[in-house]
Every structure is written in C-alpha cells, then in structure tokens.
Amino acid sequence: MRALFVIDVQNDFTEGGALGVTGGAAVAEGITEYLREHADSYDLVIASRDWHDGDNDNGGHFAAGAEPDFVETWPRHCVAGTPGAEYHPALDASLIDVHVKKGQGVPAYSIFEGVTDDGRDLIDLLDEKGVDVVHVAGIATDYCVLASARDALDAGREVAVLTDLVAGVAPESSTAALAELEAAGAELLETR
Image (cartoon, helix red, strand yellow):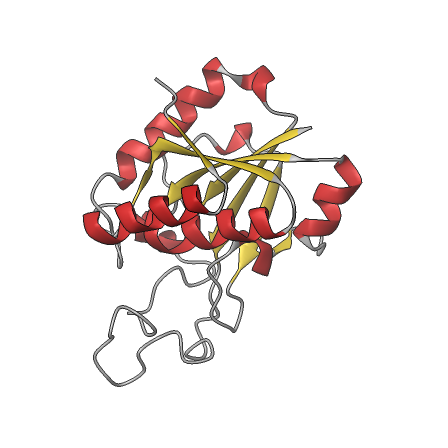
C-alpha cells in the first residue's frame, strides 16, 4: 500500500504568511494538479497541519517576548482557528483522506508527532492499512518535510520525496536536507 504525505501546506507557510517560504503557493497548486492526474497512484493521502494553541508559547516554540532565532523559536504561526492555520486555497482538501494536526501545545515538526482528526496515532493508521511505501511533498523541505520523511524511514517504510513538490526555508539547508534523506535511504523523485 502506498500513501502520500502532504506536509503543512498552510497559509502561514506560503507567501505572505507568518513564516512564508518562496514557492509555497506553487507547491499547493502542484500537489493538487499531481493528485488529480495520479489519483490511482495512492491508497491513502494524509495531510498534516501545524495546529498551535494560541493561549501559550507552545512549549517554547513561539518566541514569547523575544526575537525568534528561526531555529528553535519562531514567530506565532498556524494558530488553531486562524486563517494562517488553514490549508492554502490552491490545495484541494477534497483530495485528502486523513487530516493530522500537530504542535498542539508542544513543538512538533514531523507528521508522526500529530494525531488524526479522530485522535489516532499515524503509525497505528499506517500499520492498520498496511502502508509500506510513503511519498512526501509539502513545506518546508528543511524542517517538517525532513522530519516527516526521516520518521517514515525510521518506521521501516520505503520513502520517496517528490522534489518538485516541496519548498524550503533556505536553498542551502533544503539541499542538505534532501542529501541527508537520500543518504538515509530515501529516493528523490521528480513528478514531471
């Protein structure tokens, strides 16, 4: 069984958002186009969203009263119930089978750190459905895509990163993230 992970394609991570990355909107469009053309390629499409608690600093994740260092601390972003936490409008959410929310009160980068809308752990869902191959797309290559793909490898899945359907914070760290994943056994694939 094969699943596609769509990582954090949210308004706050695309152009104009609190932590917008260049190319984020194009990734949203590209994933929608890709899924419409390859709907039969995946048994399950699973999308994650940062879904932070707005009442606190999320375990030190938000730079409360200080300048963010953009490594461990970040500006407020993807607060539950705000437009910034919603999927980018170019991502067709009707193509998603399972929604995962992560970062609820604590820092979280990997999709595996979240829970499904019905409260289940992702690994339990993957095991139940027999998913042994995972393709990864989304934002940001050098943070949440990296962490999610790494955890999928650690969970014994065959992993491929769809390199033309990701966008990163910085070119150097994104290149390093892809190299790290390839060295760990992930395949780097272009969809076009």
